[in-house]
Image (cartoon, rainbow, N blue to C red; front, top):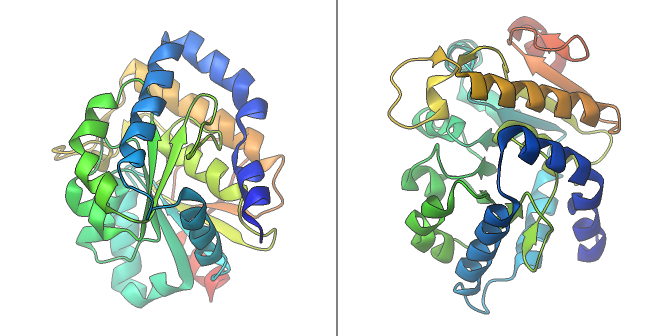
Length: 278
């Protein structure tokens, strides 16, 4: 597939802009700070030199993601740890070979600990360490106004890693794309939905979007915790974004072993999940 159609599909900014305006109004975000973060990330990417090419990396990711029918997306919700442990105990780690596995931010910490191969991590860099950065095949970095310090903290990792893809909340520019989405979890779905075939299936584990936040959402948390009012608001928006997305994509999308957060979503328990995959 030519790179230009991929770029055109991935840059969802014009259609997503009404949602973005609602988000910055509801959370009092500064548009200029998001622009500044995007441009800071561009500056860092330019330090990678001429040997790195964003379009080549995007093409390789596109090819990799088409190699398996099933895509497994790991979120940081409270059901993540128990779900993965049960799967490993019953099916073994080889079960994950059925999937291209993508992780939302801190969910990659548990995936690394459990030696689950990751095709990609989608992160605004506030839930991972440098170990996770080097663990996944691809890192899809999101720049926004609140994570500019993290961009500097991970600067050398960004420069050194070949398979970097960059995203923004504002107008795409140069090698930074806007696939749509807000939180790391729903942004994975928006990003990947632009690239996959209609026959590919999406399975979500740890995507709970309820009032309890999983401990892998932030580093150093030892336990799951009750969501703050702002976090609850963010999770509600994430649910609405996914509800919008499933109306326009042909792919089957299943929430696995999660509590219900929307009547529009399809939920599987683990037994049904095993049957569908086998």
